[in-house]
Amino acid sequence: MKFVISRVELASLLSKLQNIISAKATMPVLNNFLLEAANDELVLSATDLVVGLRCYTDTKVLEEGAITLPVKKFTQLVRELTSANLEVSSNGSALTEVVADASRFRIHGMGKAEFPTLPDFEGAARFTLKQKDLKDMFFRTSFAVSRDDSRYVLTGVLMQIANGVATFVGTDGKRLARAHIALDIDKEFSGSYTLPLKAVDEIVKNLVDDEDETATVYLLDDRIAVEGNNVNLITKLLQGDYPDYNRVIPETSETVVTLHVPELASLLRQISLFTSDNSHSVRFSFTDGELKVSANNVDLGEGQVSMPVNYHGPKLEVAFNPQFFLDILRHCYSEKITLGITDAYNPGIITDQESPVESGEQPSPLFVLMPMRLNEA
Image (cartoon, rainbow, N blue to C red; front, side):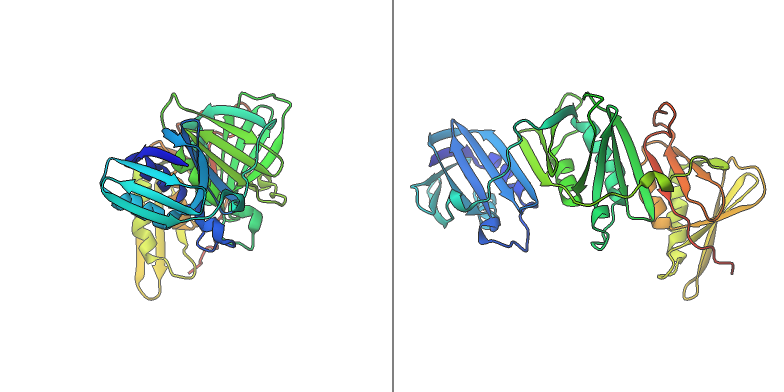
């Protein structure tokens, strides 16, 4: 194997592989990336046996071949070099030589045969959509995913396809985020896929916001792949039945108020300083034309803030986790949201006012926040 490549280009490709390599690799070869050179194309691959990433770029290939190299040390070396171009070669053994101007380095690697084979998606169901739209679906929902491994299936984002629409859901049991997008796919096609959070994060990192760039999603029963920008990310799916999230979404709310996002976010950041380490709860008190948000902490003291709202009726109180509420506000794009509440015991529904209203459904995206126990004191 022998090829010449821009140092900057190689460094960029290697940076995409960094987060795929697990710090607790179960096999020595998983600390390496696979480097393949053929037909004036360079392919770099890495995997942790759950998530795999394959990057492509055109380059001048002088001799075809493949080798695996330690990703951490090789990346550090490439970053430290200053020459514009690098010549990389291997004579078929596990030794690879890197030439940069007058500098010369030899690195021990492993043969291609030891590297796990990434799956083929020939014949898989597929659909194409704008990269910015797929990024948005994951951005709107992945923050609500559970970080508790004991609830394994909730540690991923659900992608559910039915009737030509993809529904994305993230929840940890205390909050829920849901978003929809129409797909150019056979309306008879249906399926449910739970993507691990690591895969979702890498998909978001490798997609762009350009209106003209598209991504292709390939679907198999046990794994999916997302391809775009000369990058192909492949992931196994989380196994297990995702809970029926529709059961926790109230069909109606007795009270709906409009809230100004920047003002509410500022108040929540202030009042969250007065929550206790145990409860992380603040009281929302709605009275005619006003919302008061309060919290108290035995060790620190108490705080109360207020803002005008379009509420008119008897006093209504409910408690929420301020950090969870702030997370939702960070994933809303408009300056105003609507909050639907019924009482202190039922979930609150938060919707972004700029989101289009779908026929017969809540606007997308929709966020659900479970209430907390009201401290009567």
